[in-house]
Length: 393
Image (cartoon, rainbow, N blue to C red; front, top):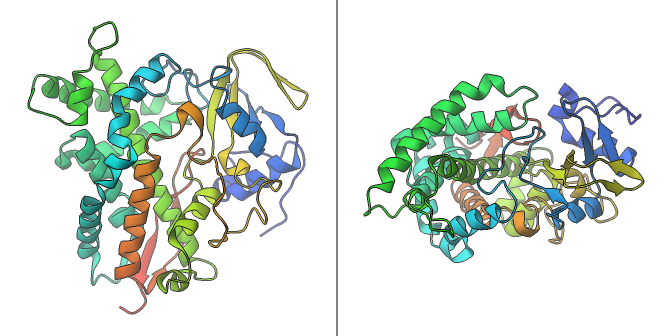
């Protein structure tokens, strides 16, 4: 690799080199001040990269707001991406389905899905770990949790990807038509399920939900929370699986040690989440003027909290840029903290565990053909393609 420029101004999240390797962004952030103004985006924003500062923002939700959007663009508050009391209402509405006990009961079904998907590629010399396994497994289960017809999985996943692209696009206009189509689909689904009192799916319960004052939830509010749950329920897991396997099948070929039981699974998954978080960063908006490390941040200004950088803070982690599956489990910020801790974190971990165990059992000689393709949005980190083969096949 050519020498990385660490000069002020070199940081460029949308450059080909930083899109290809977030480590470059992280090293440039740590070469600069704790709080840096980023002017290569409209509107400009400030970036926090140190563990202490990102932790501070996450634990102070009344000073650093989610309501104006957790991406770089300003949006109207909706669903879980909001602040109390709206956030409190929506979180309470859905959290029962994502508690550890509720998620644990999904293990047999997840194991069944994993085996069904691997059955389809058995005997195929080269297949795609993203397309054939890491993408469909979480999409199938979140559709079953929500109550989305499985015939519509491919279309709904496409819409989900569009929503993710729009979240961090400098110009979200090109995505508006597909997002309108998605919203129309969900509205029809909500209205159908609202009138079917025998339907106990999560969408049906959201559709029939009442606010504290007894008023019904609007179609628009229902659409917002359903879309957020679907995106959170598939994108994170898909990238967790592809990132984990890319490390295991890449340099040093750790997969053989993992399959032989010489690498402990939970430590390895936590290390993947630390080094390669599916969400590299999220945003908050300042409620008032803030000052961090002598840098004044005006009120109503976007602040990027860089999870991937905080997870590699050298004051917290030894050899922070190294993938070390034997690393003791430490606190990481990948799923956020506080009131906005990712509602789907427990589900993502279980889906990853089940998928990885199925691969260990059925594909112990798996090899990576190449590193495939990166997913598009600069805030997200994972593979949209990851071709693999069984070396013994």
